[in-house]
Amino acid sequence: MNHSIGRTLSRRDALRATAIGGGALALGTTGLGRYALAQEGEQDFDRTTCYQPFEGAVPIKFDAQEGPFSLALSNSYIGNVWRTQMLNMADIFVTRPDIAPLIADWQVASSGEDVSGQIAQTENMMSAGAQAIVINAISPTALAPVCEAAVRDGIPVVAFDAIVEAEGVVYVNHDQTEMGRRWAEWLIETIGETGKILMIRGVQGTSVDTDRTAGGMSVFDQYPGIEIIEAFGQWDPGTSQTVTANALAAHDDIAGVWTQGGTDGTVRAFLEAGRPLVPVAGEGENGFRKQMLEYKDQGFKALSIGDSPALVAVAIRVALDLLEGREVPSAISIPLPIVGMDDLEVGVNVFPDQPDNFFVAIDIEACNATFTVEEVTGQ
Image 1: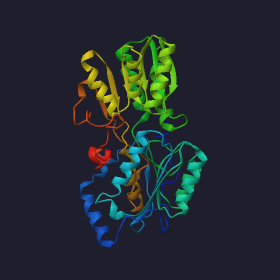
Image 2 (image 1 turned 45 degrees about the vertical axis):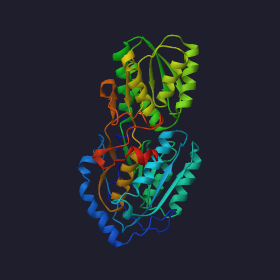
Image 3 (image 1 turned 90 degrees about the horizontal axis):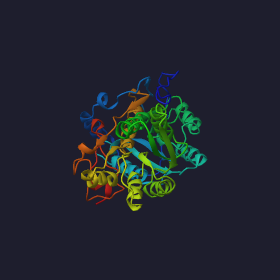
Image 4 (image 1 turned 90 degrees about the vertical axis):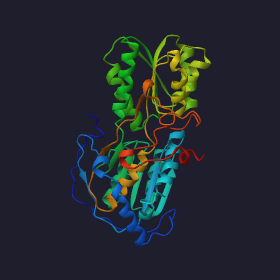
């Protein structure tokens, strides 16, 4: 079991919270009338369907506060399009008719890969009046003390995408270990039990990179004939293209690629080097899906599993539920959006007219976290 989602919590009693005013951005009039309208709009949201618990999850509940609320988003790494798209989608989601009346103030900040910077950023959000914090953490352990301090003060903390290993923090994510495992299993099925696999990792030190890699290696380690060539692509197409080009220059017999992101950059490196495309298991970038579509008839084999930026919307909804006193699982599992070559559907999971760096998995329908391509891309 993934230790990060199988943890148990010793404290299950409700935590006393104190309403704190202030914030970075006021979201218009939020009187009782609009608050009531938001509550009416919840009728379309099925919490039982959305809040599917990971194995080992336990109930988490805080004492109810009176809304509307001051909410904050603490982001870390900002160096790829997934993160910028996620932040854009968060800003869109808090303006939804059933969400906006619940939020009085909305703080957003990004600290980059600086651990101490994100700790200070989160502390500042608490000082500025955040009643709940949604966080994409640069480290699963270094952010634990500040998150636990927030929980002790009655401030719900919801981690998404990258986890925080802290008591009382709610976790919303795809099963990242399962994602890495499925990529690896597909590659073994496709290329066989021998050969060199280029393994392009993400941002070192994050739980996402660690968990995906652990999932992949749990498969690869079973096959002595598999040789791993490892590089860090930062989940970024440009960086991934560079490290792939370097690997191709050093190895002329790469049999397959397992990559956490920047997948279209990796494919471009093969094309620009004049090398035949090998099977690629990668992320959910539109550019990669377009490459799958373009080279399908030429025998290209690929598997795309997208980490949805809409996770942030689910995390926001969970934070609001905690503020309203609702009980939620400590670890919420969002299904993996998996697309193989035969699953490609123009206008549904691949968009030829949209940018390559657009992350396609923009909807989590079970959680009413849905977006249009136009609003996400601004076109």
